[in-house]
Image 1 (spheres, rainbow, N blue to C red):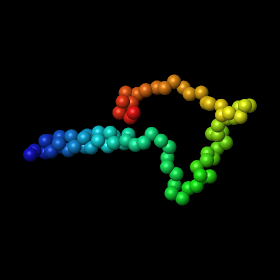
Image 2: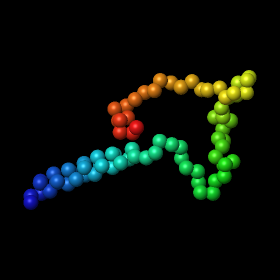
Image 3: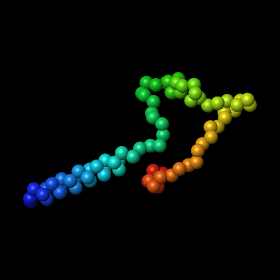
Image 4: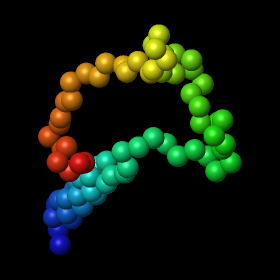
Amino acid sequence: MSSSSGLCLARIVVIGALVAALGVAGCGRKAGLDPPPGATAADTSPSRPDLEPAIGPDGKVIETPQGPKRSTFIDWLLN
């Protein structure tokens, strides 16, 4: 095995490892973060008042407008 073929094999292995790492990096749940083990329900409330839902005059929560749903080329894998 010559030096150039060993270098080529090493490059292929490194590229394969990077592709595998990037492929696995997107795995996971589509959800919020889990609370810490000792957290209580009071700890999970938002700490910023501007993040709390707005209440209308009738006492119902005013829904925030959602933008258009955009999709990417990898959505078939995530959904």
